[in-house]
Amino acid sequence: AQSVTQPDIHITVSEGASLELRCNYSYGATPYLFWYVQSPGQGLQLLLKYFSGDTLVQGIKGFEAEFKRSQSSFNLRKPSVHWSDAAEYFCAVGAWETSYDKVIFGPGTSLSVIP
Amino acid sequence: DTGVSQDPRHKITKRGQNVTFRCDPISEHNRLYWYRQTLGQGPEFLTYFQNEAQLEKSRLLSDRFSAERPKGSFSTLEIQRTEQGDSAMYLCASSSKTGTKSNEQFFGPGTRLTVL
Image (cartoon, rainbow over all chains, first blue to last red; front, side):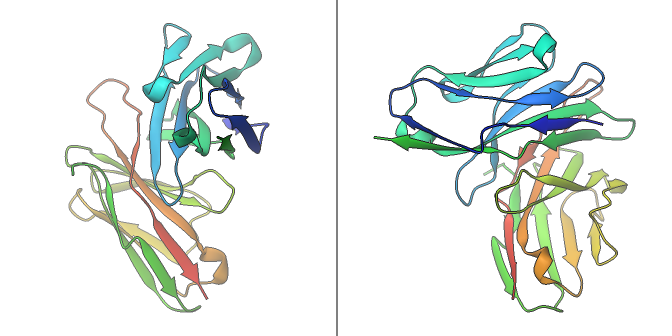
């Protein structure tokens, strides 16, 4: 069964600083991986996804993530954080089950941005 | 707006009452999912529909919960005899599969349920 850990419950960064959010997954086969962002009171918006191919994935809003199979990680990065990036970030791992697309979400990392 | 919509956005009810939520997926999506999200946690899978067929249910979905998607378009999630532990955000998502893998799920804004 899949599982996802996000070691950092909460992170605070200064505006303009770089950001890295950690994600580790457990899955027996090649996973597909997602990062979603959730602003207060809102649904989840997909930032980026990895299915196969290039292990460095570019997403929206200047985010990127790198899939490292040897470390079972899929960390999210952004070179320069904007105040509007303050939100909850969820890493998710999916698998093709026999009947449906099963996606397991991590517990999330809350990002605060200091002006 | 062609995204996933959910109604109502907020629901406050008293313990023991029944509640029903509605989800309208993206029109061309044949797959629909319900999740529950409690404070400080990621979404947890509840159930999945492909067209009108409910193909998977989580053990989280007790007998008090029932979901339908009668015509393969919108879906409803009903909770009977609500309990305080049912207080959560209920998220709906949809996706499509057209013969190849396509697992990106598009989420609605959620329905926040508060049981007093």
